[in-house]
Length: 50
Image 1 (cartoon, one colour):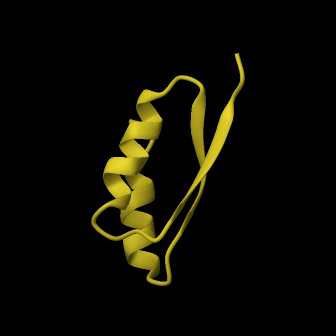
Image 2 (cartoon, helix red, strand yellow):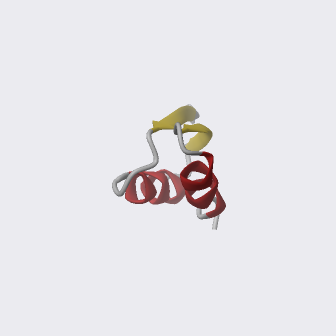
């Protein structure tokens, strides 16, 4: 099965549901998360992979 690598650009209100959707896909993984506000980025990253 092919693996997909994804990046979440911008960690506003819609980033968390997108990351959670990737977590539910066996063939996908979030490899990068970017935002200009470090605290917002870290909060979203902490919610991935659970």
